[in-house]
Length: 248
Ligand code: ADP
Image 1: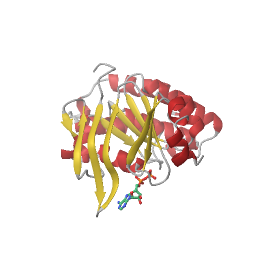
Image 2: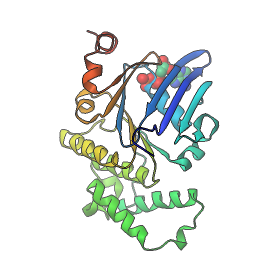
Image 3: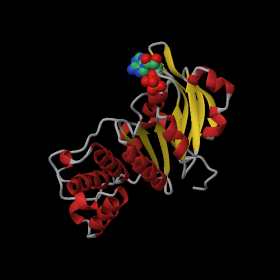
Image 4: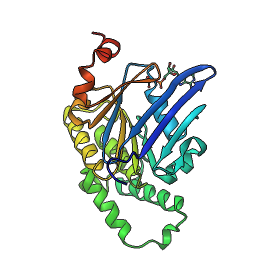
């Protein structure tokens, strides 16, 4: 897929909760190899946008096309993961009593079962994949530790790695730096930059300093609609954005 071609294309997407439209007629696209942030005040529709992309909420109108082929509005959550969209929620969902390595092994087994391949038949390159992943998230030395004993930031990175084990083309992240120290935030930013070299990353985030530092593209949502899109510099200088979002 070329850089200019969208990995995800939303056309006039509307999400209706018993008459209340959390998203209204949203046209929006995500490009490959991009760190793409979604920002906006509370209630703007950011979480609903991630929900509709991963199939947790259903669109009442419009079309969401993934990789130019799949209409996500017609697919199940399971089917959407299978086609290449994985989401990391805010609360960690790792297996605390298992080691870091075992957590990654489980994530890998899930991927293989999604692909219909018997895990037992897989070869040694599994270990290499896990080792590479541990290296990427900087947890090689912690691989035999119980996941529950990790620091908050490390748990989050482990979970990002588990999401990456699904080999997604689009990763969805929900406030990935919530509760992190300054150093952990920086490491997370670097990790996100790194993973976007091979795929698109769409992130809902409130921390504007973080967005400014790591965004390729920023979408500002307001009342279920797209208010402005561009670089952080472009959106933060937009008078409408300042008015509704920053309150000045
Ligand atoms: P954000 O993530 O930007 O804070 P949300 O997507 O969570 O916004 O919510 C957008 C709007 O939709 C809010 O007004 C919220 O109350 C409403 N909403 C979200 N989910 C539901 C739901 N399941 N049922 C009814 N209203 C909902």
